Amino acid sequence: MMIKKISKERFKKLFDELKEEYNIAAPILKDKGKEKILEYDFINDFDQIVWDRQPDSSPKNIIFPQNSMLGNDYKGSKYYDDNLSTIIMGVRSCDIEAVKVFDQVFIEDDSYIDDSYKNRRDKTIIMGISCAEREDSCFCDSLGLDPIESDYAPVYIFKDEDEFFIKIKDEKYEDLFEDLPKGDQAQLKALKKQRKEEFNESSFSLDIPTPLPEKEMFEADIWEEMTEKCLGCGVCTYYCPTCYCFNFFWEGEDGESTKYKSWDSCMFSSYSVHASGHNPRDSKGKRYRNRIMHKFSYHPLNYEGLACVGCGRCIDRCPVNLDIREALKMTEEYLLEEGGDESGKD
Image 1 (tube, rainbow, N blue to C red):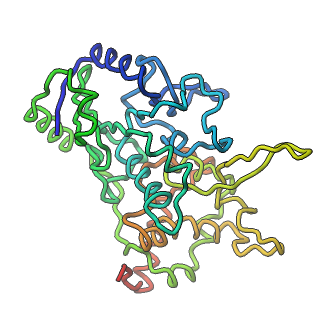
Image 2: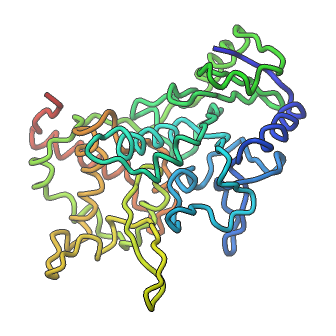
Image 3: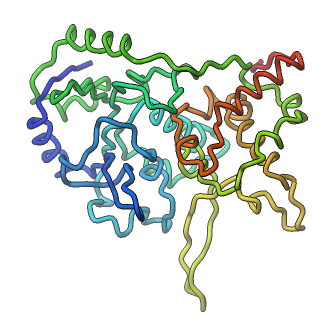
C-alpha cells in the first residue's frame, strides 16, 4: 500500500500527465435541456471535475454505455481513444459496489461472459473518492456499505479542502504515483476517523431477511398498492447504477446494417411481452415486484451482496416521488405481519 498527499495544483499536473496515456472520465456538469446534470464523461480539463457532491448519474455510462455501436462503444466522444486504457476518477462507494455487481454478472459468472464488457472493464482503473457528507436520499450504510472507503477500488482519493490524499492499494498501479510527495498514514487515518464521526446517521433503517423469501414475497398483496402512482417511465432503472437490462437493434437496409446495444428497462410495459403476445408482468405491481426481488432476492441468491447500493438516485429522479425506501419498509412490515420465513443461501 502507498499513500500520497498532494495539492490541487499538483493533482492538476498529475491529471495532465495521466491524460497523455489514459482516457480520463470524471463527473462534470453538462447541459441537459433546461438544467445542468452532473454526470461522468471523458474530459481533458482537470478544472471541470466536480468533487464535492454525488453525481446525478453513475459511471455506468462509462463501463456499460447507454447506446453503443458494437465494436466502437464511444464513437463521437472527443476525448476518447480506443487504443488507450481508461481511468474513472471520483467514484463513490455506492457506485464502486455497483461496478462489483456488473463484474459479478458479466465477467465472474462462468455461465455467461460478456466479452465487450470484459474488454472494456479490463482496460479501466477505478479511482474512488471518499464521501464527506450524506446526500438527503442516500442510505448506502443502511445496506452495509462504507461511504468513507470501499475495498473494491484499487486507488482511492480523500479530498480535504484543496489537498488530496491518494491511497494506492494495488501495487501494479504504484508506478503511476511514485513521483508524488509521500502522505502521512496517521493523518489519513485521523481524517477517516473524523469523517466517520461527522457523517450524519441515516434516518432509514431496514430489517428484512436477505435474500428475501421468494415464494412468500411473490404472492404478497402489497405490490399494486406500492406502485399506484408509478408511470412506468423507467427513469429509476436508467439512473440506477446496478440495472443492466439491455437489448439489441439494427439500423440500415439493403443488406447493410449496423448492430447496436442499448439499455432497456424491466419497468417498461413491453419488456416482458412474449412473441405470442402474452405478458407475464402485465401490471406495474408485477414489474416493480420483479425490480425489488431482483435486487434483494434473485441477485443475492446467485452472487455476493445486494443489487441495490442505496445511492438514492431512483428517489431523486422519480417524477412521482416513488421512494424505494418506503417500498422496502412496506416489505418489512408485510413480512413482520405474516411471520415471514427466514431466507438465505445453503
